[in-house]
Image 1 (spheres, rainbow, N blue to C red):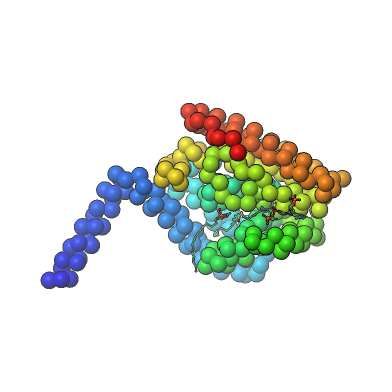
Image 2: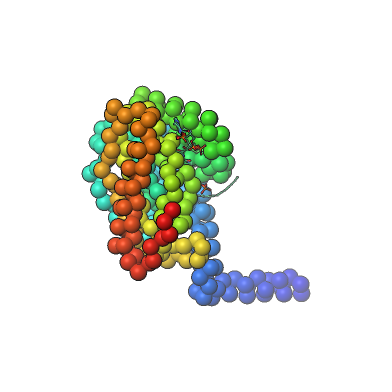
Length: 274
Ligand SMILES: CCCCC/C=C\C/C=C\CCCCCCCC(=O)SCCNC(=O)CCNC(=O)[C@H](O)C(C)(C)COP(=O)(O)OP(=O)(O)OC[C@H]1O[C@@H](n2cnc3c(N)ncnc32)[C@H](O)[C@@H]1OP(=O)(O)O
Ligand SMILES: CCCCCCCC/C=C\CCCCCCCC(=O)OC[C@@H](O)COP(=O)(O)O
């Protein structure tokens, strides 16, 4: 008898889920984010054996990129890349981009150049299969709690970029930022570019506000533009030039971000100045 009541309650709850999904925006949001994380975890399990054939190698980023590119379609996110001609064709460089959410992975995988690895917080290493894939992809990990160690890792990255023809992708805000604008930039990426004497390529991922908001628990289909801006050379620059370079890049990115926001969601109020 108890089993029958339990089974009936479970069946009722399962039947209620589609109704809840239809009626509650918050429930839909959590389902979609849960599926996003779960799906990536599953993709990571597929990617591990494929990447393991090479071992830890930046070429594995091509496998990760290939496996990730369909995910935007699952969510009805239309992505357009603008300015791809700005990528320097045959040399290392440092990509810097804004960081709004873990959805940035989708934009990153849309434009990720060959032999380009992100710099990531080391906590990602401990995300089970995802961590293993990140390691196999040659992702560079930094400990944000240890500035000195993080700087050493970046200095090593400058050497690796030149000796192994590797490009590096950095989120100079240093953390995800849902504010609808950009945080002040940390200078690590720009020190890295100056140390390696390679260009900085700014990439702006347009605001998600019109289709995704963690605060409002809203996640619908929508459009995202990934704009590659003209590279800034660093040849001849030294450590003293880093602050000005950082501000110049941020100003260019903020201008492009605001122009994209005005184009894609013209009715949204402008974000408060940072
Ligand atoms: C198919 C299956 C798929 C499954 C797998 C799915 C996904 C996997 C694939 C891809 C995943 C990739 C996802 C990656 C996203 C991860 C994103 C992140 O983790 S963002 C967080 C980590 N990143 C950063 O923090 C980068 C930005 N931070 C910096 O650049 C910082 O400057 C820093 C180097 C980390 C140090 O930060 P800290 O806060 O500790 O110090 P300051 O910034 O205040 O700097 C202190 C001081 O030092 C100077 N400085 C900084 N860097 C250097 C340097 N390299 N050389 C010399 N000096 C340096 C800095 O200028 C400050 O001095 P001053 O104040 O005088 O200017
Ligand atoms: C054994 C442990 C198992 C754990 C399983 C966890 C499963 C999670 C599965 C998929 C997660 C997919 C997202 C991975 C990449 C997200 C990149 C990202 O956005 O990192 C955040 C980082 O930039 C800044 O961090 P903070 O904003 O400072 O915080």
